[in-house]
Image 1: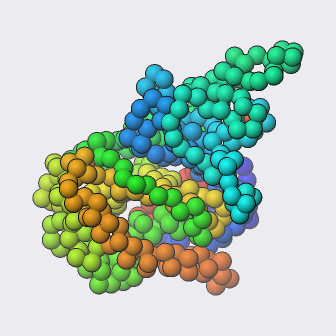
Image 2: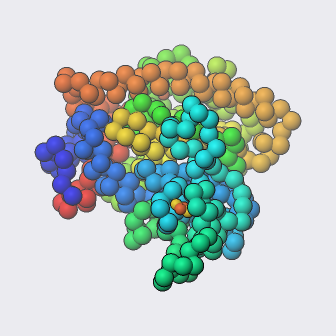
Length: 401
Ligand code: FES
Ligand SMILES: [Fe+2]
């Protein structure tokens, strides 16, 4: 693949390394359609993409419908108890088999609504071809007179699956190197959080967030803006307490620590945790927030009392779908006042979102300006140079350099 727009790897590499020397990526990579197509292949065509959490499909037949990099996928607990990821594209005439066909007049021409649920088979709504939980075609009406048609030869394409700390990942590259060995440094930091046993609560997806996916990742990961954009409401965790783990080529995770002034801080107007501390975390861990990225697009935060994940799925050069949820220990979910506390926590986070989201929308506008610069970074946003390093390495591999 050729990098579009005449961008050279040498020029892009100026964004790699550390904050001391790196400059921002060329603004055009945040908005150009040709670059977006290149990036979808270079980054999302071979990266490990999170498609959900294992506790979201607890029983055989439970399935999630997701779209990743434009591909409709099914994440299902198969008959042998293992989680499978397969294409949701019918092998007859390509109807998306999880799409709802029962829609209102207003919605009938809008993007498909993919349904999640539970069942023993998947039946395509169009001509009723039926697939089992492994993706094997097991029913196809009126195909008996079609010479040479053999159901046994037809199945939904399966994708690789890897489960890391309860997060389900898949990859469009069947030959991709395993993910977990590339996350060992992050594993060490998360050991006391028992991430595998945490439970996702009420995930939501915003389908049409109007800025480039990298703007979202950058805003989530850098701590420079905490004491500025979030002045006042973020005072319990000032930017001066930011630090980032070292990044080396080959790492897939980037992560950092935001020290809080007191133990058990929280992203809400009280600045205090609303739930009991996570069982197993140390006093030191209760006095910081970990922000982590499993590149390209799983974002996680770990606080004293809870954790949360964001999934960023590009839908175009200047848009993405954003999914998010809290994850808690079972013991917290069972508390009698859990629902009330959760509402307060969600309302608290929205006070941050009301500052972050307009900022990201305005950054998108600026990135499309003729006056946008490849600016320099502060030490408090060192993770951005790390993210750039990871990205530019992917661009270079795709370009054969
Ligand atoms: S497209 Fe699925 S059965 Fe025809
Ligand atoms: Fe923010």
